Length: 214
Image (cartoon, rainbow, N blue to C red; front, side, top):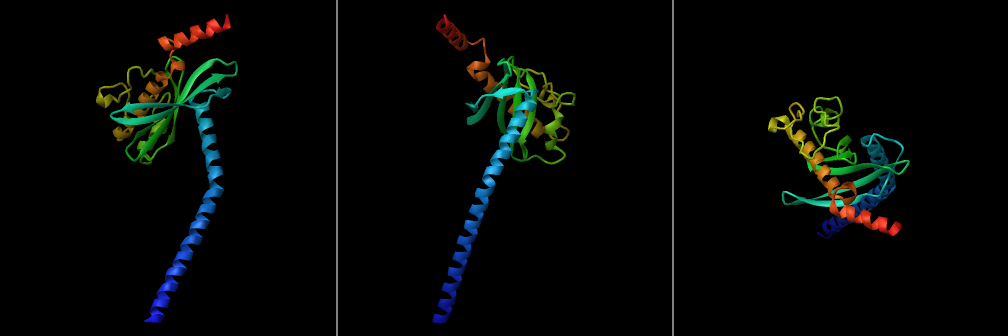
């Protein structure tokens, strides 16, 4: 009996040691890969902003976080204000996430100062390959669901729901989710004072700045 208890104790000890060693190895590997993964994500975001703003020679401000309550749930949007080499406002790139057919659908959308869509790219998605994943190209300029140049002041809606945008074939759920992400991105963009020169708050800020300069 003592021999059995001793064997069980040894097994537990060995398994514990193995678990500790494996945990240490995984933590070490995670530490090694954490930096490169973060750098790769940053590079992808930088390239994405250039792509959706349709310009390479730009300066990008630190993101502004905008929170909005939609259907009883709080969503967070990141607004990247963009200027050209001369300091002229080009608009902003906005990160927006919604729930697609297979999981989170994260979109980066570029808007000019007037609110028109300059471009977009998918940052993350879990949609079905060959179907929902087509959103990466389906809504680009010249494609069937082309949204480039549109102003989402009037929300973009798939034609199946009475709107003006053709949905991806056999992927209406993904199409709705994508357009919702774009519409939400637009609303978040217009909610930031710096993006709407017609708001009273922004006009007051301008008047204050002008007085300081006098």
